[in-house]
Image 1 (cartoon, rainbow, N blue to C red):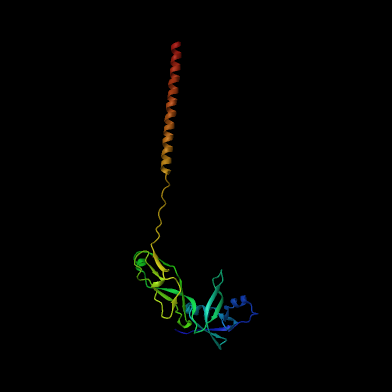
Image 2: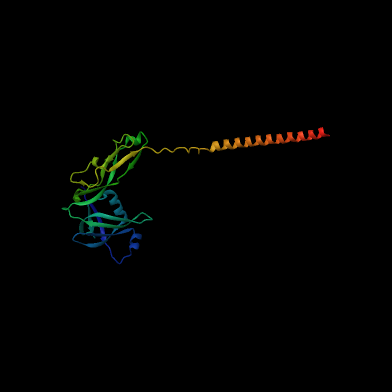
Length: 234
């Protein structure tokens, strides 16, 4: 495993955390079994680049250019608005004791079900929980998706290629990645009864008009008869 080195500086507890962040520094702390807490600060971009490259791997933490500490990034705190890293917890580790941590998955290849059939790749697990010595922590767990040929094909934890000396803690049957069928938007169907309602309304109107016409015609006949009757009497 390649060594990952990070230069950090001790931090004055009287210094404003806001001022540090405005100066493009991240406040941090180093702690662990048998160690006193050491407040630290680190350049934002330096740490960001290193973390993107190394992830959960073991770090040689060089404090003030002198003290070397073996550490892991135990926790990151993010600003909820900007999304920037606002604090780092570095955890001291012993090279002779196994630890539990999480490493990210790395998708390798192109799934035929996505390329040829238009399926949607769904990564269900972004990280895999593992247990191993600090020196055996892999940078990532590779997931080869080239065997996902049909819709709903999936890869489970038990199918992952795990480096020697690393124990996976996740359930073997857990799905890591799956290809879902594409979502097809259906055209809205007409509401039942709309056409019928118009037809019925039209029929009722026609029938009503017919009845009104017949009634009027009957009244006219009655009127005519009355007038004829009057003529006869006269």
